[in-house]
Image (tube, rainbow, N blue to C red):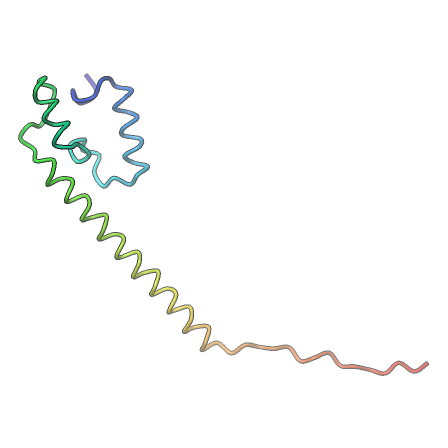
Length: 106
């Protein structure tokens, strides 16, 4: 078997893995994305590969990492905006001189 027993088949597992990568799930360890309810259901039918894993802790770590990343990105964006403003203020605007007007003699 090329997929964890908590999945119905290999196609379902491949779909989960694709979505996990697209959603930027930090870990592709399936238990990270599990819920305590689903884990309990899989344990009842002997399909949980890691019954000793506390999925609630894994979820909290994943959320903590996601929040940390959002804070870092937010700080970086605000830093970039302030930096751009400062550079714009320090850079003199070069305004071209108005075109010379000449009189046409007719």
